[in-house]
Length: 315
Image (cartoon, one colour):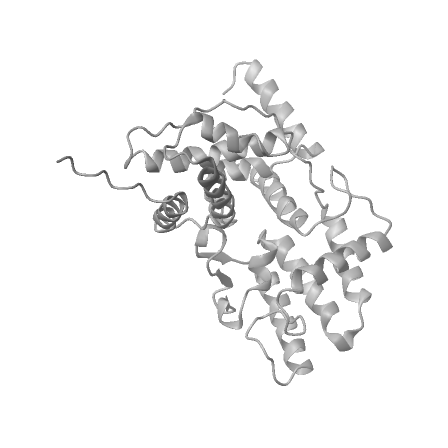
């Protein structure tokens, strides 16, 4: 008598196994998990048991934009490569099946004079008794001087900042990676000054975080964005780029771009130092750091000089 075949696991179980495997390698995949669970429901409703190209295209085609369709196939490609280890009949969506040319949105790059003016404006914007003005100024200054992600800055605790070593410790940044971020002595001095003001203003803190936002961490980014927008509006500034208003991430873009300029001014080769910069800002891939480079006039001038040197026979 022929032994009955074992029923394949549900699509939800397959997705859970894949996400668990990838997270074991250090990936977060919160967004990918959400979308693949949507695919699992789509596949269950279709009644199909095999991962086929028509099934993948059927789910991808339900997305609204061409870019979203392409992203869905990218997520499915990783899932299919994993599941093919268990089912050799699994079809992997090939690259380029859905093409989408997406133009990179240009951020605002703060000049050094703008940063100085902005920090002064942020400090005067809110009443001192709430401590928010000093907190916003300190966070803006730290973001501009270190290139931290905004969420990394507001999640810092007192124990994460080493004033003697002039460095801070980022715990579980993007991709759950920890890193040490050395700081300039002037930045450490500003953080020390803020800590003294904070401790004089608040006797008992409800949370261990270094920057104080009335004890509510979820509202911190909203507060910072509102202060940044209001300060820039009061100064009559309009963002240079594609975004309708200045963003916290503009500090990170500005830091990376100005770091590249500093490397060039020191006479160092940018291509040889980009890995150090990429590690400093916590990028998992060096290509992500190049993605932050923006065509400001200073960088364009460097590009022109290098091209002229190249056409004349240089490297």
